[in-house]
Image 1: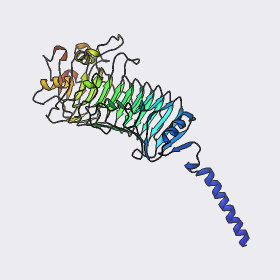
Image 2: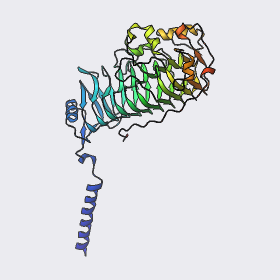
Image 3: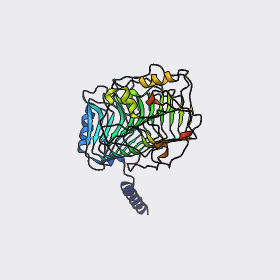
Image 4: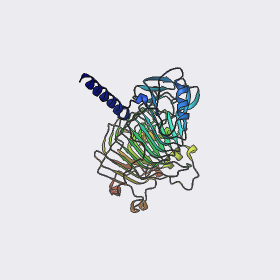
Length: 425
């Protein structure tokens, strides 16, 4: 009887082990996961792993600081995951970088997920992804610790000329251009992220079908920008929604290198729509952005103030139109930021008592066609705590109007957008 019980116990153990082998296999036994720990050879190991990665590969950065000296390059991969074990635990530090400018540069990717790590102190862009489809940044941080330093890299998270981009739960801090930047792309979600201490917190440029929501943009020069610029392969953006964001205390110095487009963003800007088309801005809390809560601006203002921004692009429309601003909440003090650029100085002079209206429209062009044309009209309504001014900038402010009545209209809601990109794990 004892021998029979022993055989039964042995059989039970064998079956249990087989079940665990097939159903509860440990990650350490998974050939699809390559784990890399900080060491003197870690940089070479990481680059080699990315070069040799097969479809579905997972490369995992273990806890600690990886001291990097070169750009990490990735090209032509499908369904790749580059992840850490936590944003505050797996850190790629490029402070000693001697070759390349970007921290990570990826091109022609399909279905790539970056998750749970930090990139610090790159001399150029932190993570640039180009010409890709299905790009996710999940709980990733890009950081330059120096305060308002023009030597910091330009962009933190930088997907460009791509489709189906998802940025979720990320942090971008200290960029000399934009912390989170999406350019010339289509079908985008930027959500649940924090941008602070950059020149531009979040910038959507020449990009279509973007939803930007549930983010915090604070202590940047400008919190959130929607721009269309000339002389780019993708001529226009549009059909974008900016909603349910916290745009707070954007009062940081403009430390963009001279000549950069964002060097023209005045200190104290909450949201700026420049040559933006078909954009809906709603449900945002806009607090203590003391030069411009929301600005509706023509590119012609930038070109007038800086001859370097003159353009010859017959397919480009420099005006903002199809704008719908509604159901936002505004509050601010009357303290104007000091040390401002040309646009900020002009606005401060126009409102020298510090009482700058919350919503500013430069009025270029402000004609009957815009407000009778259902495609192009600008609508502003149901904003709490907001006052308004049409600056009449084209005529050098001679006939400013504080009457929002001509813009008290509605527009059809912009459609919701969902990026077809890898989900956050």
